[in-house]
Structure formats: C-alpha cells, structure tokens
Length: 188
Image (cartoon, rainbow, N blue to C red):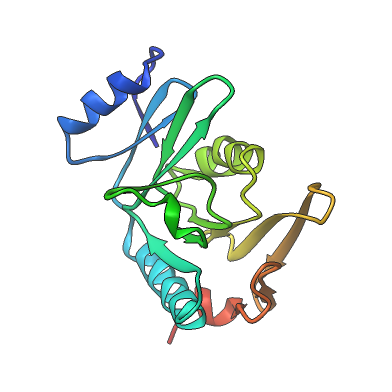
C-alpha cells in the first residue's frame, strides 16, 4: 500500500487526483492510498470466494461485487467521506448504488492480504469497517494460510474468530457460506 500524498486532502482533491490516474486509489481520513496490482495467488483466492458467494446469493436481494468496485462511507454528522475498494463485498440494499459506486456500509466485506497491504487491511480498514457498521469482515491471509473473521454480534459488539488451515470457516451472516481453508489456500 503506497501513500500517494502524505498531506491531508479533501474529498474533492482526492476525486481530482483519481481522474488523472488509472491506479486503484482509496481515501481514508484525508489520506490517499494507492493499491498495487494483486498477485496471482490473491486473484485465485478472490475468484474462488467470489464464485462461491455468487452461487450462494443468486436469486436473493444480496449481491457480491469484486474490486475495482468502489464503496463510499459517508459520515452524515460531519459530511466526511471515505472511499475504499474492497476485494469483495456483499450489498443487500440495491438502492445504495449509483452508476459507479456503492454508498453506505456493505453487510459483508472480504479483503485478501498482500505484503504491501497487510497493515492497511488489518488496522485502517478494520477500524473503518467496524465503525461504519459492516456486519462481517474477513481478512484472508494467504501468507499465513488463515482467515481472521470479525463480526458484530446482536449487541453490536465486535467478535473475533481465527480460522486456521485445515478448518472450515462459516459466515455469521450467511450460514450456508462455508469455505474449506485447505481447498482455498491449496487449490488443485
């Protein structure tokens, strides 16, 4: 994860910068981040999870989207916007889509770690997603072959579960979404 500009920017400056590049840019707390292209392992994992979610959700009001679809978090109290590009997200409110982005908190987000994005996904995005009410957030770590699952319980408290290689991970929101980590991390 690369900082484009360490100075604080406005959302308007971010959008102007974005129009001048084909890079994947994110805007969080006044800082513009650039995401490098993912490696093949990352893309294999993303494709696998996307296919599984797509098949599960087909015909329901919820839909899965893959990067580079933008998500805008808008804090109505101070008119502050944050824009991210999750690897995968599930949205169940189709009214939140504009022509090019989803505005609001998706119910489920999955990020797949790369060496360059590890701290960004595990700290910055975790805090952002939980603070804006994302109900479930998976951090898939291909380097360690485990999945960190964060979710909001019925009292809106953040819960955590670590799922290691050889174990199955089951979504708290979509109970039918069950992934075998051995198959995910070591496809044949």
